[in-house]
Length: 95
Image (tube, rainbow, N blue to C red; front, side):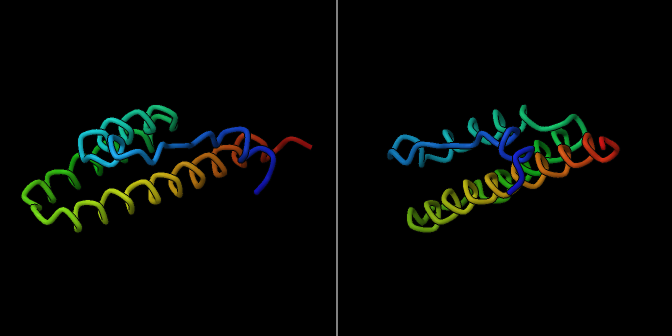
């Protein structure tokens, strides 16, 4: 990963039980979206809301934890991707 990507990427989350609740996950994801540029920010906020609506009736605790864990991984990937792309776009013409 380039130095530029690492500068933009500052993602971490706790693994305590409190942070594995769907409500904590939602707050975390929305806050992480604030770190994104305006265009991707709107898109990912919309997708987060849609995903939560899609899984609102999920009752299996094991499945909920799978979804939460995967969501943290996906958020990590998105922030890396968008940060790297943004960093490359900003530095594209710097010689």
